[in-house]
Image (cartoon, rainbow, N blue to C red; front, side, top):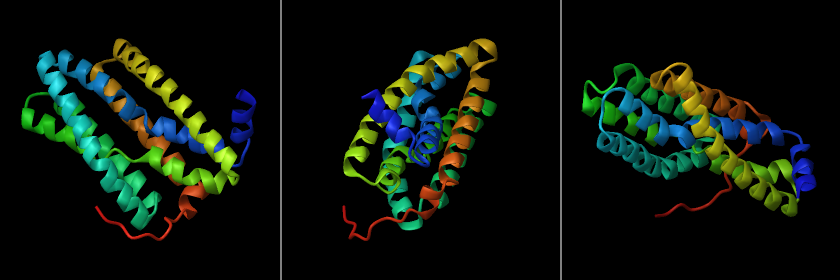
Length: 204
């Protein structure tokens, strides 16, 4: 299994795309923990922390299919990177303004969630053009799933380290800035720039 994963990572662009996607998705994997820690540090209750985290999750669920359709229409770079920037700005607004205005706090996490870039779906769309053979593509899907599990394990740990070294607000800013860099790495790659969605008729 490990040898098969190494074979995939040796393919041109594969390691960059996988690493960029994982780094770009770091804000999404750490947001619930980061929001809770930030809210508690600002004096908010666990109820408020849970509500803000829930709004982020629901907003992400709404935004992903919409952004995915936009990627189909306009390509990955024109959607993924701007979305990552807007999502990061939403979290930055929360970090800088705090809980002084709850409507603003809810709006900030909603914007961050809605504009979370669909990097995972984008990567899955790129694997066939990068790897060619169907067996390698299926192996890449499995490797991607394993890498995601590691990211969702390491991500919250990274947040707690940043909180302990600086502050919850700094953790929000650093994690989301890092996510923007990951998205940028993906969209600047040749496979992402040249990818086009297969023609199809969209419906509900």
